[in-house]
Length: 412
View 1 (cartoon, rainbow, N blue to C red):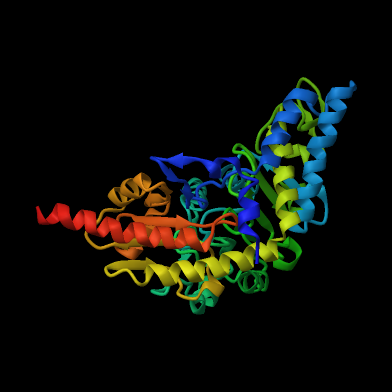
View 2: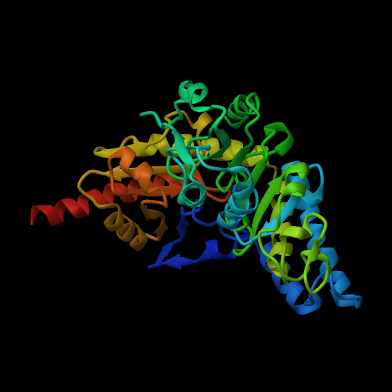
């Protein structure tokens, strides 16, 4: 098991007090906190190396380029990518999906074609495909979500057809915590020659991920959910796919040569990285990856599974609580959505904030899933490597207190 007490010392913000109470940060599915090593990587770049990459022959530019491309190398290794050139930097997961929908989708999806998603998708992995389907006259289809919070995979064979051009789904639901069987779905899709995009925004920060084992065609994820800074996303795609895709953005650095009337595109990965990139934050993401690798993703997953088991056990003791997602922590991540009878999630979130507890309340950018669950919103507590079972107990105690507070209000 992880030494959570030691790990917490690496995160200065966890020493904060909120409303006079120790901070209990349970909003990791929205964004994670940053270890000192990541903050120092940012400071070090701006105080020692600040220069543009790829374009200069002076010392600072060469150092900045080495750090930037070195981060790409480490991120490629982290996800098991066979070549660093198959790792493309974007602003976030959303932009990575939009890149695929434009640069790949506009070329491969036409009238009457189908894109297969699931009913648990984040808006980021739904709306871009809605736009593409409307633009190209295609149709979206969906793998249903069962009452237990898992996918109804028995319907997958009938949903895959000669018209299906892409399967795009989340690795882990940001609402239900469900860990989807990606390899099984990829095998079924590939048997019909259909590529698969995996939204790893919730999965990559918490699970050991190897793109060769998954055999996915695209993988997208964000820096800020895995201890890195905001403003950096990652797109991995198989080399052959990237080679035949057209650029998403045009301008400087994504070209090999330019004439007044035409241009020749740069090699991978720079063909998809127009303009000055987010140099400092990419370098800091490399530091975040180093931190995660030092601890070990298998160890992080084991810690979160135990923590989820403890949290679910504590929350189930609360009368009037409704929990969403699979009951078995072995097939779910550390994001727990719930409602407490008689208390709106927003009211609950505000009251818990007064106890120093930071969690999320709302539709979590999953409005179709909320409708499927029959609710307008939920509260969500999401844990990470620096959270403890004690914090899960603090959450349960605060929920009991919230029931008492709102019960008094209702009585009056």
